[in-house]
Length: 79
Image (cartoon, rainbow, N blue to C red):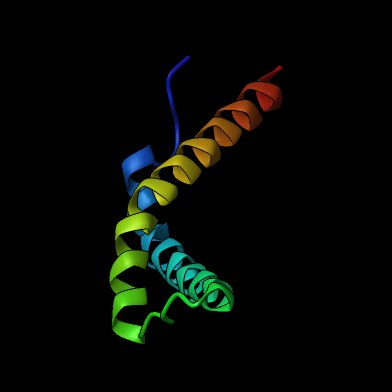
């Protein structure tokens, strides 16, 4: 079956800003929780940098999941 729609890398590129932002927020909140154990709270800059690093692979995995769902929807639509 020929794949229709967007490729995985295109989906990942479109979703990357959202994934990086979500990862940055999660990194910041994780540092707030770690502050209970006397670990310093990360600043905004470090949270954004780490969010961009963690957001890349996370967005790629999510884009692959979306691509599989699109393929499944195309498969059941034609059946």
